[in-house]
Image (tube, rainbow, N blue to C red; front, side, top):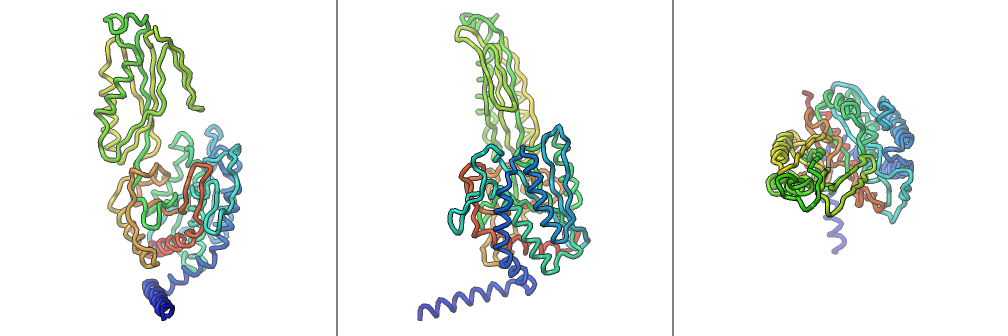
Amino acid sequence: MKFITGLFCLLMAITLQAQKLSRTERKIVASVSENAPEAIRFLEKVVNINSGTLNLEGVREVGSVFGDAFEAIGFESRWIEMPEEMNRAGHLFAEINGNKGKKLLLIGHLDTVFEEDSPFQKFEKINDSTAHAPGGNDMKGGDVIVLYALKALQQNGLLDDAQIIVAFTGDEESTGKPLSVSREELIKAARRSDIALGFETSTGFDMATVARRGASGWVVEVEGRRAHSSGVFSERTGAGAIFEISRILNAFYEEVRGEEFLTFNPGILMGGTFTDYDPKSGKASVFGKSNVVAQTASVRGGLRFISEEQKESAREKMREIVSQNLPQTSASISFTDAYPAMGPKEANLELLGLLSKVSQDLGQGPVEAYDPGRRGAADVSFVAEYVACLDGLGTMGSGAHTPEETVNLNTIEALTKRTALMIYRLINQPAK
């Protein structure tokens, strides 16, 4: 009797879920399920091609595999080369052009943090639900979700007259410089779109990203007067470079720290008679003696912010602190931009609402906004100025950027269904 009651409840739940989906949407869901084993095989194939950012041929090869797959479902693909001096492979763009519904930009990346000399190279199943996979979670799995969501729509004849641009960059993990070149095509695509969906790692069925903090670098350089340590604090010798840089960092901590979503971190600190820093390797060398007042010091760090206004306010406070020098010292601070902020715009929250409705209609539960203070920067941030954005729509897993990276194979089908229905509903909304 208990078995019959339980079976009845299950059948009722399935029936109620089906009532929330249109006949066409049920066909989309069925196509995703039919393609699910193929999607896992495709993921294994692209994971087993090393595409560390600096393995240019590997990045191009993964791009070629995806490019062929997109062309097989009616997209026109192109490879965008980067200038040779940038030492970056380029980007894959695939596109269909039409006038129906919202114009979509779907963002992923082909490169991983695992270069050719990494011991972590191959897709390996741990069990039926989990695989160790270099870049499988961050973010070839997200790329596969994009491909197979679009494939399900194409198999049901639902992409006719839609405009969808797929942009898979080849240098997200170590962005090519200058940004004006490496992100030029991505921004151009955003200017032709209404909505951008990013497929970086998912933080769970119940979370999506409506805001990401931006990233900026900063460097403080200090000069002091080299002299015998017996003269430190005297009018002639002053405080020395190390005391001055210590004052600056302490003042940053005391006077700039505290705003929500604003963080700044000193990553490497040097001080002594002579210092030298190699930005390519991140290594530094220092010479100094305990009986000599330090004549030079420097610190390099990062700044995270939720808006351009917050970034500029923090920078101004830091400049003011740096200008208030101890005796016989001088200091300067410089900033470099990396990723802009993706602020929590109202349009982003509306997209979240649509995703949550899709998820509930699929029986996957509601989706809420993830804490932007816990997410790093990503390519979607470059287009946030131009379009409504939602990110974190990729695969689930653990250990990204480590030799223990895993991808949850059991969730790929469900997340692909969610993506396919989200895209279907968006391309059937009224255009601008």
